[in-house]
Image (cartoon, rainbow, N blue to C red; front, side, top):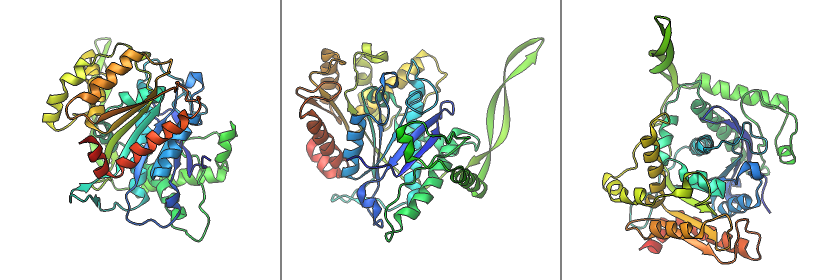
Amino acid sequence: MFPRPDLSFTLPSIHDNTRLDCRVYHPPYHSEPMGTSQRHAAVVAHPYAPLGGSYDDPIVCLLAKTLLDVGFVVATFNFRGASSSDGHTSWTSKPERADYMSVAGFLIYYIHYLRPPQRPSVATSGIPTAPTFLFAGYSYGAMVTMQLPPLTAFLGHFASPVTHTAFADIRLRAQHLAEQQTVVLDTPSSPRKSLGMRVGGDEDTSPRKAHDKLRMHSPDREERIRKGVKDLLSRSKLIHRKQDHHHAVESGGSGHEGHEMHREPCLEKLDNLTRFCSAYLLVSPPVGIVTHLATMSFSNPLSNWSRRIRGGGTGTMKDQRGDQQGDMEQEDEAETKLMLHPTLVIYGDQDGFLTPRKMRDWTVQLSSTDGSQFRYVVIPGAGHFWAEDNVGYKLKEAVSSFAAKLIRPRDLQKTQS
């Protein structure tokens, strides 16, 4: 049985402040006083919203429950236009990528503030190991997950954001909710409670759908939460940094773009922010059907593979207003990350939404490249919706095995040697 969320709240998207509905689940052992074990985290993205996809999708729930059982703190969310989230589904999926990055940024800071940073565990080799952050998605959610830039590329935008931006808002909400949840986790004498709260803006406190009953709609509670976030900002140590502002400049009757430098208050960078190792889980990614994946070229990410390995990194986030070449490089970088980090793709051999030849070529190419950490599992008899007999169990087993190895790096290394 899928548990109630520990947190139910909203976040602004870093794309345009669109309000997104989010949930956070803690694994069962988090109901007891915490020891020194690390917190591993995962975000699970849902199928295409116009076809009914949301965080209540049965496969999303199966994935989240499986990861919870292994020991991950799990976040699910509704993309813009899905269920009770605001906005509309885009044609390009770029806003949805920003939606996903908003939730990922929140979860990283939430876990950081949930407890003082712990010393990294040490594997038997004596090398410190960082906790895992698993980017996961099913169907359209898997496609968006594939297109995300590497974690290090977008997390930097949360480091010291201007206070009136979505980046800062997300950080403050993460800190506030972590402090609230810590009180619950630190009270072993009382039953574990769910903080089904909404956070932010001028929220609509009227019931919308059945799953919204999990939230606490008291106006007093909403006001306390908003005041809590505002109080955090008032107590935060701010730094003032010059920011470049674009504006229209009048000259000879015609306008042109100009720049002005203003000093803006910014949140202070956390030097001890918890560092995560990235991993990826893609269930039934619609390769060969939608967006640029329909004409995916394997030559670009593979030809860059040796250069990226020698460079020892994945670069920085490109400006979204860049030219087409910049967009192509960004896509190459996003795909290459699947080989740089532990990745598992799971799909059924009866999936009518996939192009079998492209899927086979893609998985074989990426998994067979020297040094690649990309792996795949094909489930016989499984379709796109995983409704056939026994395939759900096989999906769960594959996810559980992969996730367990992620939190035991020594075992993962053995399977790849």
